Amino acid sequence: MKCIFVLLALLLSACQGVESQTQKTAEPAPERNDRMAGVVIWWAHGTEPFWKFTADADGVNFENMGEPMQDFPYRVFGAEDATRIFDAKNASTSIRIRMTHKTCINAMSGAEYAWTAEVVHAGKKLQGCGERGRLPE
Image (cartoon, rainbow, N blue to C red; front, side, top):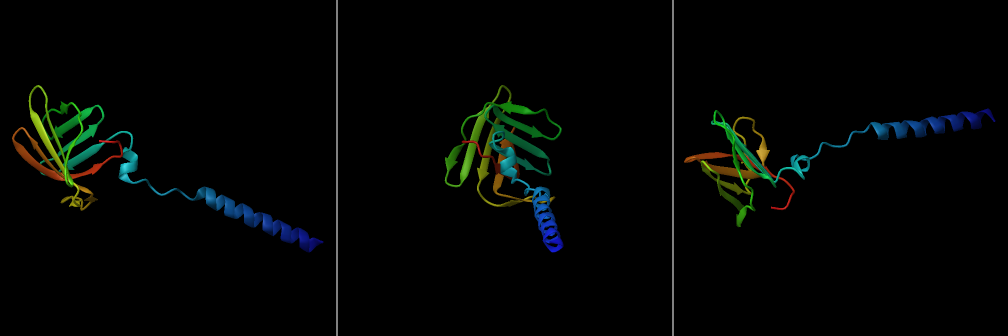
């Protein structure tokens, strides 16, 4: 009879051990696009000079280091094969963004991105890397 109680106790403790391990297992970190889903449609950045843009359903925000942020009304990016193009004007300037579905490696960090970005803003051509969110274009 003692053996049955000992075996039962061991069995119960083994089940609790597996259950507690399952609870402690962390879920894998989400992909960058999963974190942006529902918020950002496109984003990109570049170095030397440092710049970035984000596009969501409310508009496109462009920042170039040392200059004020520029806002542009959002509209659907046009499509040419593997490239998405955005052209817009605001009260003071214009912007053209070309996102090409081609691997891009950030020269400073070595990070890899799925999209290569080219921005023409205020007559300056800027190169960088970017990502696409999961909202419809």
